[in-house]
Amino acid sequence: MALEKFRAAPLPNPPFEYDAQYIRQLIRVLEVYFDQLDSKAPNFAQSYRADQFILNTTNTVTPATGTLSWNTTDQTVDIGMEYGVVQQVGQEIYARVGNTTGSTIPNGTVVGFAGATANALLVTPYLADGSSPTLYILGVMTHDLQDSGEKGYCTTWGFVRGMDTTGTDFSESWSVGDVLYASPTVAGGFTNVKPTAPNNVISLAAVIIVDATDGVIFVRPTIQQMQYYGDFSRTTDYSPAAIDTAYAIQFDTTRISNGVVIGSPTSRIVVPESGFYDISVTLQYSSSNSSNKNIYSWIRKNGTDISQSSRILTLNINGGYSPVLISESVSMDANDYIEIMFATTDTAVSLNAAPATAFAPGSPAANLVVTQVQQ
Image 1: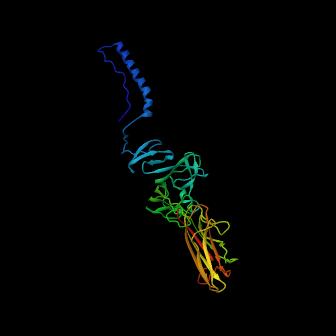
Image 2: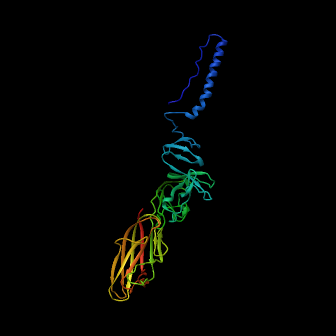
């Protein structure tokens, strides 16, 4: 141990009989000694240096706030923190968070990013229904945190204890080893059933101990950036007014969507974030005569034709149907839009929707799928 040292004044050799001078010398030496103690003791508390601290590894205690103790179960050092939180060093990681939701966020609640305050993130119970980006997920509260302006702790990696892990609160039955996902139906909740689109799929934790009050989970969020998509249709016919003229196809139905939406005008399909997108469109044409006519179909991005995206169909079937498929991959920035264009050499052509029959569902005049494949 390396420790700052000081020396007391040396004591004089004692006489064989009473000596007043010796007593005065002894008193003076003790005065000097205690003066040194008084001057040095405060410095010990501020600048104590040691090569190592040795903790008692056989008598485990729960550390008070600001103290350390040995954890014989996890074989690491415990740090006592506020709210009764005990952190296992090297085995748990916390985020410092605040709560301004208006109500207490209980221990074991799944939380996501909701802004920031001084020296901390703000959190709110996370709902994985697709309304909030996957990247906003943070972790699981490791204690009750009131909406009091105080800051607390969210576990981003490690154990969360003292919670109900039976699954009963979510109408499920959990077992040891179950993987838990952020719930798409209960804000702040879990589910052991993997969600499907358009819900967020975020695996958060595994069940370690099943118990109604003393359950334990191990938190390890697997966060993947949300990928956006949309599936749109035109369910009514559309005929060109003039030959050799480009027309933008307007869409009237959103079949499913996550971020990608019909814009204004409704021929514009708008993406929310930058990325690489697959564009796949099926167009169904019909002719009212049997003469040959060429139909051109292509994609525009932000009002500009995409090079080499045109497909040409020669149609001469009177009353029949002929589909055209266009598939392109396009790099887009946030709020960019695409449009599906067509032109024909004869106005006796239409995009034609077909109604459902007794044996088959309806067929749209146009169907467009936009899928983000890379961030």
